[in-house]
Length: 184
Image (cartoon, rainbow, N blue to C red; front, side, top):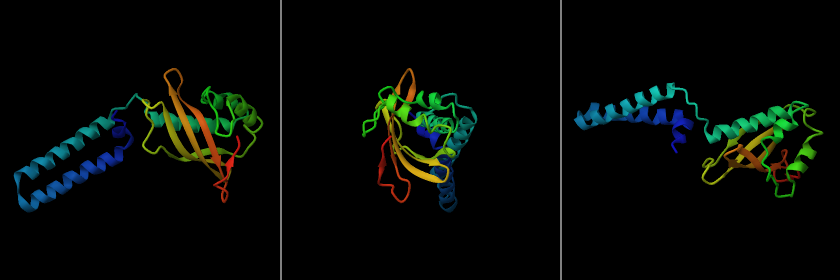
């Protein structure tokens, strides 16, 4: 519910610190007591937030879980024995818009896993973020194989037993053909 407090730590710190400084500045020029109280409240919230940030959180956010799974799948693609490690994060109901299901995906990636240049992901974007209540999360990211970059759009589905798993994947590119979708 309050995942944004964990995900956007720097933003929250900047807003609280800025509010405290601005209110303190206004108090300095006007000497109104209510501005000093407001600045003290903002500074107090900043201190409480900093103290809470020091407490390690055991709860993994949905966003962090999806990012870790994407990175794990990319790392597994670099190992010859990584197919099973990739497929454990693919949903049983996986199906691309072009018709590839989970079994066909396994068959398509097996010859390449461990035999392509270094695979990595970055620039992971969630839009307005994953929501377990909706059951799915749309994710956009860059997939890299060596120096070649692909634009990727994925849908992850959530279930209580397996967590977030890949349900759909679209791959476009590489540049300059980023509008072209590849069949998986």
